[in-house]
Image (cartoon, rainbow, N blue to C red; front, side, top):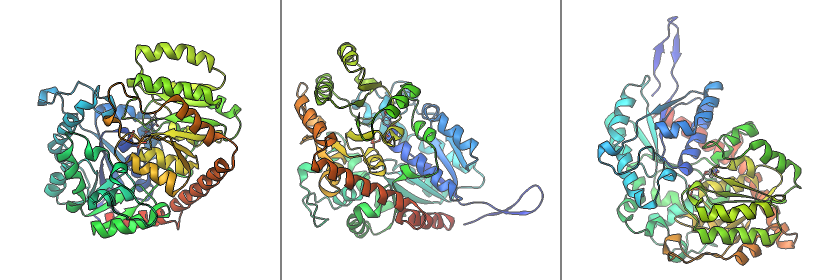
Length: 478
Ligand code: UDP
C-alpha cells in the first residue's frame, strides 16, 4: 500500500514502500541483513533497521556511510534487556560473539524475546508506518509484533536451501538433489545440540507462519534445491544472494568496514598483500561463534608453518589465552616474513577480494562460504556446527572448489581434551589447495566460474537481481 502525503510546499509526494528488518544479534546474521538493507534502499525501499546500542556502535562506520550516501535507511536502537529484566547475561553482551560462554546462548534467546514490546512501540511511532517486516529466522517473537501492527512478515534465511529443504522434511537420509546424497551424520548441528530442541522445532516450522521466505543464496548454485524447497514450503521464496555483492560499484574501503572495527593495521595488511604474488596467500578464519581449543590453535599454527605457504590467520578474542599468547610470540617471529596474524576482527570481505588471496581455510559458515564463492577463492573446509557440514558438502562435492580437512562430527561431540584435526592434516590440505598440481588448478578454474555466476546473478537481468525486483514489488503492494 503506497501512501500519498503532502509536503511543506503542498505538492503531492509518493512515500516509498517501507520495510522493517529485524536481524538476530550475531555477526553472521547482522552483516547480510545490512547488505540487504542497502540493496533494498538502492531499489527505492525505505528501510528501518533494528539494532541495539552495542551492536550499533560496532557498525558505526557503516551507519556513517549510509548517511553520507543518503540511502533511505533508518537505524533504530532499542535498549537490550539486561539483568534488571531477570536475564542472567553480563552487561554489554548484546551479540552472540560477546557472550563469555556458549552456555548463555539460550539465555540470549530469552533476552531478545523481551524486545517484542519496545519494538512494537517504536514501530507504531514511525511515519510512514512500515508495511512489511523481514525478520531473521531465529526471531520468531516478531510474529506478535507484525500481527498487532497488521503488517506482512517475511522470514530471512542464511543457510543454503538444501539445508532448509532437508531439515524441513526432517528426513536427513533423503536424496533431494540427484547427485547429492546426505546422511544424518552430515546434517547434524544445532538441530542436535543438547538443550536446543524446543527452539530448533520452532525455527524449523517458522516458514509456516510467515507470508514468504527471503534466502541469501543464488539459483545458479543450487537450482534443484530451490525447486525442492519451494515445494516443501509452499510459499513465495525469493533467492536474493549473494548479498555480499550488494553493490558492485562499492569500493574496497566499504568492504573493510563490514561488521566491526578491525584489529589490524590496514595499511600494513593491504601493503603486504599488494606485495605478494597473485593467488599465493592463504586466509585462515573460523567465523565468529565457535571457539578453537588451545591445542587446536597450536595444531593449526604448526600445520601452517610446515606448509611453507604465506598466510593471514585470524585468532578470535575469545581464543586468546595466556598459553596461546605465549606460543604465538615465537611463532610470529619465525613467520614474520610470510604471515600476518590478526588477533580479533579481520576485514574478511576485503581480504577475500584481494587478488593475492588464493585459498581460504574456513568453518563453512554460510556467509564465509558465499564470500569465497563471490570472490572465486577455493576453500579448505573445516565445519564445526549446524549447516556448516552441509555447506562443506556443497563446496567439496557439488561445486568442487574445496578440500575437506576431514572433521566428521560437530565440535560439541568432541571430548574436552580431544582435538579434531592435527597439524599434518592442515599441512596436507594447505599444500593440496595452494599447490600447482592439476587438481588444484582445476579447482581454481571452477571457483572462478562460480564467481562469474554469482556476479551475474546480482547484475541486471540476473536471477537474484530479478528476484529482488519481485521482492520490492511485493513490499510495495504489501
Ligand atoms: N567476519 C569478518 N571478520 C572476522 C570474522 C568474521 O568480517 O574476523 C565476517 C565474515 O566475513 C562473515 C561473518 O563475519 O560475513 C561470519 O559469518 P559466517 O556465516 O561465515 O559465520 P558465523 O560466524 O555466523 O558462524
